[in-house]
Image (cartoon, rainbow, N blue to C red; front, side, top):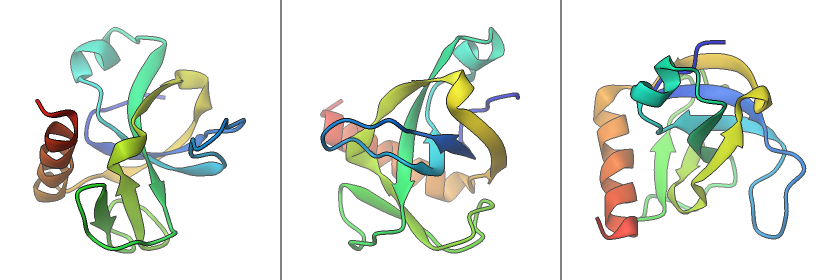
Length: 113
C-alpha cells in the first residue's frame, strides 16, 4: 500500500500501552513523503477518535465523510507516534489542505517549534 503525507488511513493500533490510542481506527499520516517514497518501514501518524471533546489545541475536527471517515472524529494532536507499516489496513482518503494546515499548525504549537 502506498502511504502518503496528508492522507487518512485505517490502522490497527493494538496492542496499546497506558494512555496510547489502541483499536483499529483512522490515522493521519504526518510523515514527509521523502520517507514514504523510499518505503521507510515505519510511519509517523496522528490517531483519530470518535470520543469528541471539541475543538482545542489538542484536537482537530473531521466532519463525517471528509476524508473517507464514516463518522465525525477528532485528530488527537497529542498522540503522535510512529507505527510499523504492517499496521496500515486501507487508505480512506486525502485530507483537505485547509484542514491539514490546521493539524500541522497545532502540532507545531504543541511541540513549541
